[in-house]
Length: 206
Image 1 (cartoon, rainbow, N blue to C red):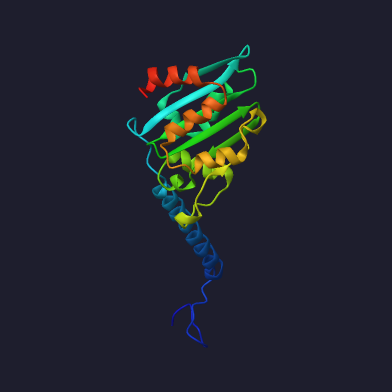
Image 2 (spheres, helix red, strand yellow):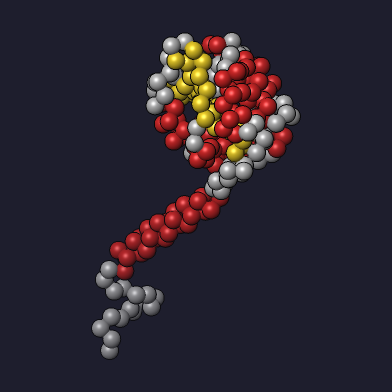
């Protein structure tokens, strides 16, 4: 006769099985979480290449004078590192970072001490380009399901204190013109036109 018998329903009453089942269920939850993380990584857009990147420029004022400098191209794929680099610029009142990708969309980042403001001209770009996805994540914005629902996301009043109002900036974001052209219009409104033009001609051939 077997040591373990069941006189009722044929179930297995060996010691420890009751304790084992929850552990197996927990392991299944962990595996499911890992699969979800892998799916998120697979869904993340590939980096923009050098050919995709129109420009990466920082604007700031030094002793009251406007300055425009080219930044490293890899910053066009990493919002966090772009913010870090802007924090290192010794501007009188912080610094502004401008990124344009594939003439399709632009990103504006304004850093003043601990205050960070961001604007993405077209949230649809978050499905295809890493810095746009970074902005959406930074803002806690969900990716649009319908193209008709898409538009700019972020702080449209990012330059309200220097005379560029939110409705004007929104109109620029909605324009069909190339994103690098729109960035230049914004820069001119901020009174960095000549400095910016020289920088993008020299560094990006625009």
